[in-house]
Image (cartoon, rainbow, N blue to C red; front, top):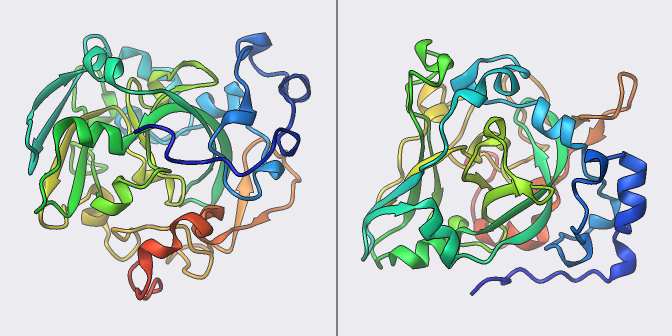
Length: 300
């Protein structure tokens, strides 16, 4: 059931690969063979230009390895990602530990060029490789009573120096409504620019939900649980006033400590102008119907 997300743009709407690589000088040809014309692209994607490999992999929030943006790139190599398995449990027909290779054998890997918007009001554009979460959930068989999906990051104190500090209540946990998790835009990323996703970006499996603030896109997932009730999530537990369960990108709802009306594009340079933030990060046409009837100022 892969390729549910249909690209409505023609080849000429997307920057040709050769020009794209020459302009950005990305990875000295390591991205050769990736054709962005076939990517699942949102409306307005012709305006997107992906960040460089160095920007994407060198500027991260992954507090398990430290709170500085460069800490994940410095320290995440300590994370052992082979072997890897994901425990899928809760309201599913086939609970159990699913090995990474077992999962990959069943999944269809697609290329997705997505905007990424952090709650800290910075943004970038990332060419992900991955598969739809809906296909992984289908592998386990989500039961009719399930309403939410919870995700959990690995907790390895010997490999993750940041968990020695009580920044959050470890392990890191996030959650989505089932319909959000099943949406074709929601993927489990396994790579960037056709290469295996590096540790600092959430190897070997990380969630990507492009219309939500980045902290919802949990990294290095080891457990997925189908539940009837809304699961507690790490940042919401830490400060519900600042980090709502939904955390949809919404320029009209400011973070209590800063405006969300504009964003700073990573790679734009020191004097680059801030960009207006788009509702749902530019994916409103695809996802707004999920929230019909909800007051998005209150259900933030």
